Amino acid sequence: MPGPKNLDPSSSPRALLGAELRHSREATGLSQDELGQSLFVSGSFIGQLEAGTRRVQPDMASKLDEILGTNGFFERNCKAVNRSKYPDHFAEAAEAEAVARAIREYAPSLIPGLLQTERYARAMFRAGRPTATEDVIDQLVSARLERAHLLDDPTTPLLWAILDEAVLRRRVGAATVMAEALRHIATLARKHRVIVQVLPFSAGGHMAMEGPLKLMTCADAPPLAYLQGLGTGRLEDDPATVADYELTYNLLGANALAPQESLALIESVAQDYEHGEQHP
Image (cartoon, rainbow, N blue to C red):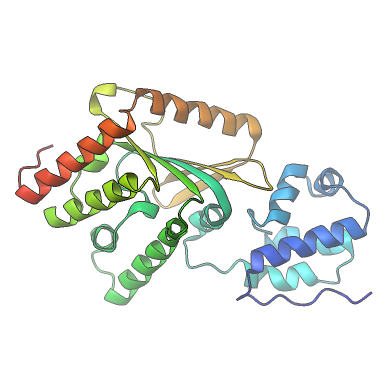
């Protein structure tokens, strides 16, 4: 039987590597759980690798080659497959996001990347990198807007965002930038492309005050939770842990304004920015 070929990084490399992993595993007669035991990971993690929602890391690649007898295939292709335009702490989450069937996200302080406009993203990146060259900022903005093309499909993925009221009130860039950004969100909501709720200041304290939360449901893998901090991020797949985060998200939704009330508030604040009347 011919051996596996090197992967073309331009042709869905994560999916191709996952498909080759599944083929090689099945050829050796191992179940996902059995292969996972040899690597000290869960069978569901192997399933995520095969589905392309998780990365094959270099140290794991060499072990896969040893266990599956693939003659260095995974080690050779691992680096090419793991190239990403995103920071290391977010790359894996971005790739899972790209194949997710449903995304639920709580944003405590800024508009989620999938909902950002170009001017909002540019103002945000420039504020955080005041000495960066325009080329660097352009690359960051381009990568951010490329992610938003997920919403070009009229129905998939389902995107449900809960925005803290601070997202609306904290001005990023000029008032016109904020007005445009909020109108963009309102337009997507009115087109029934996204579900948006606003968690008002009056809701008080809650369990997600420490940072953003993203939940992703994929077709061929267990649900994932992504938590992000300043220059860092963590993707969780432990079912019990993800279930806890799902409960947190559900409680946020229960305390947030209803979608229609949220839309009215978003449009009202956008109008305030347009008229120069927005107040904290």
